[in-house]
Length: 317
Image 1 (tube, rainbow, N blue to C red):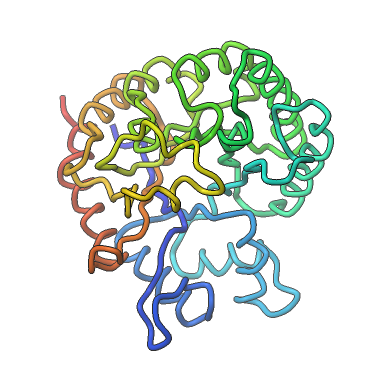
Image 2: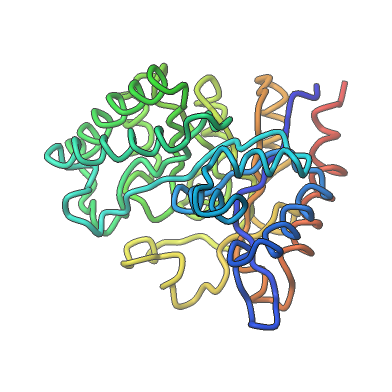
């Protein structure tokens, strides 16, 4: 079985004379970053909605577009842009997904994002299906029903009008984090239009088994974020405005998949093989520099683990 391709989720910072910076601040940094990813074997890139138009201008001038950026990627040896991450965390009271009065405004923003991605190879929006837990609390059945209604409508528009899948990614700090809430959400959503995106570390942090959840939702799984964690979280998910940054006792939540954290990646790959998943798996991590390392080093370690530990599982007889 060899039906998996690997993309990279656009988290990367580099050390420069000006200090630690995102590679998108300068074209030469961006090119070096992307060439490093390609040298490691990645053939796809996932990025954030806010970065995509900027990248187009960075590589093609003030009139540059996302299509120009994808062409730039192809010139470097990538196949395409794969996914774009987009969320509404709820800090704007007019953009809270659990509130039906907000649905039209958010729906229109998703349509605008689909228009922005037209002409690229993007076929997936990785979306946080609910606002931050702080803005959804208490998470009730009514809140989940309203959220499901929004995604049934929005997912239908995205797929039928643009060929883009709404793939729901459950951060440990979003309203749909607990197993009962996730189960109810998928019971209430249409599998033709609302897909599941498995983020291994986010689920483990929230106390949910990502392998069991993937097995449960394998027939509507549209992708994976392959990353590890060394922490679970009983309380920080309630902290505004960003639990990932505001937790006092956790400096780094997410690590490259390397077998040293709490995620059981071999079990996940055995499940991927069992159900015949075919598609993209995206590597992701963050804040590598906090431990005196670099994103290049950590990403390379993750690629070694994928190639030498995980991919062989897919090829077992």
